[in-house]
Image (cartoon, rainbow, N blue to C red; front, side, top):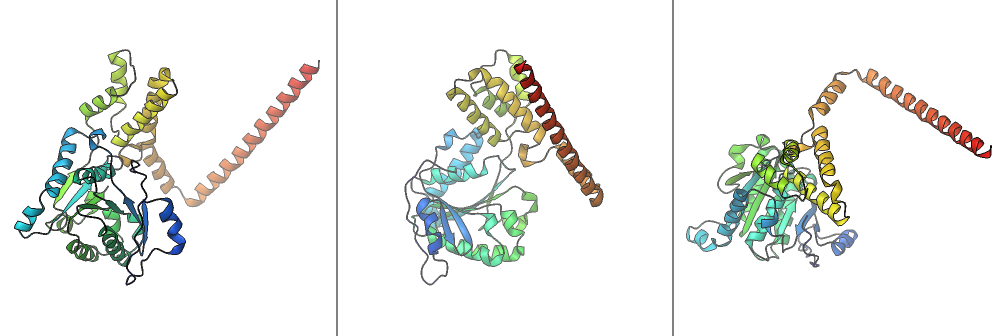
Length: 347
């Protein structure tokens, strides 16, 4: 989430013609944070400019270049769109696993559009059906109209939203919203591009371009790891750590930077390598990489699914009994140890 600006932005209620005016009970949230807006479909997320410098994001140079070109061509191309009698809007799909920088890339687009470009997000969890989908789009456009173009509108986890209604309903409602969104870049994000009806989603007038967000390759992982202030004494030790980074996402490397920064601030540089190694090994075991569970987790789930529910319940109850006995035994042993210590002290 962008935190570079704490400037208060007044929430503008919808017109009285709409039943989506901000309820009085929700006004406290608007006053406390400029990042949320209440609408008929629930909450919309609003991020006011300015945004962080995309050059500080740990993408590959080619990704930063693609984002910059896409945004600047749109920003500077209004006259060209008008000359071609085309609506001044674009759509792009960001596809990739969790933690690969899709959300940060949406803010990078807003940054490249200029210092005043707003950034609206329609969260997938707020959409329950076709009606709330229509309300969300309509209310988002009503609110964004109070900001000058160009602007960015994010459709979060679009595959989840499509799954809550018939695809023809989703795209029919979306097309009506697109028709009244002059000066907007629409960015849809998905973790599961394979679930999208591609012939309906990827087409002129909707989402004309797809940008894939995958994990860093070995060369980029090596560069990101070398940029950390680890102070590794020899190349063999570095290579051992590098092997553990296979499958890491950009979010993992960002977390590593935060860990190193914390250790530096606390003057604990001597713990840097060991802490990073533990972090990498933990990620390898838990299977958090690319948003997927580890093989061990999948195997455990499969075994649970195959077990009769009554057997599983009995096993859990037995585990609870054993845990209680263990706690009681440890407590008694601790009490006897304390009494023995007191007795020895008296003697």
